[in-house]
Image: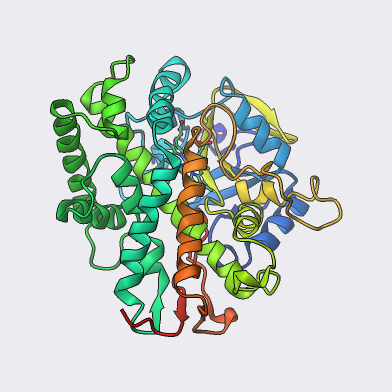
Length: 421
Ligand code: HEM
């Protein structure tokens, strides 16, 4: 950028998060291991809305307070989803790592107002057609297949062998991909690569293949509809185009896979490391259902979500927010906000957490219920089939993924008595 020599050009706009005192880089080891302590100290220093720096020093606000996250998500007219209003676009490089999550796409995620109601309404109604008992049975079949592949060996790494694959297979199946087909497995593999690329993977090519396979699925279902989410989206009176359906199917599948997998992972970790949940469920201690709910309060899968963009200048948590500022929803911080847990004990049996967000763009009904069916069946089936399952490493050796967005483990090595088939 050229220096105009104009002194005004060097004066930051008042309230800009980049120039707010002590803006904190949103990243680093503290998020990997103990984010709850970090959120507590951010809250102490900055209050419920903290100035943060995203990758590459890009400024944003992290909304840490339970009532502030509730307020932001309930006021679309002030804090909206279309990221094209971001005032930082001139500073974003082409290869910015958060572009896949923040760059505008013509999907339900970035639509607003009536258009969002139309698109989200179609998704909700299509998901409502999923029979939860059938879904549980299908998840059990998938679980049994995956378990059979490692149960004879007496040990495995569950993230790769079980946790990531189960919800991916379940969700592509409810969308109408044929059960057990080679191209269904290819789609599951491509999803993994595009959402969570490992070294040597090509996420862009994988994402292209996901789009192409789903476009083909929409074509097939137009010709031969079935009892599946894709067919119900096609048949919905809102009359979505094929392109809109493909975009929204990608959103549904991607939004389902990672959070549900991490919900399963964090629940298994809790069950395997916390003696309140004696792993031998028959021991009659706290139940799998209680563990699933506790994870949503304490180790929620989507710990931070990007985000909302301010429609106009406004105030939030004592901060001056400028039109076009980006707000990150601090869902994990909000769930553990001392304002709602004054006696420092976090967690309750109720579902008043913000893990599925809130307001118009919240995880659409009945997706949280379907996720619960998948996660519960995954955990219960594993514990039933391998009742003496234990961690193969010391609990302190388990490593959280280096992500400020998703909370889950890099690996979950376990041991059990081999099952002879
Ligand atoms: C069957 C599994 C799931 C499906 C089909 C699903 C689907 C979706 C969809 C379509 C959206 C976009 C909503 C919109 O922009 O209008 C969404 C948003 C979201 N989902 Fe889910 N989801 C699933 C599981 C989960 C799980 C397990 C969690 C976390 C515990 C979760 C947390 C969220 C959050 C935090 C958002 C962002 C909401 C916002 O912008 O405020 N979802 N989900």
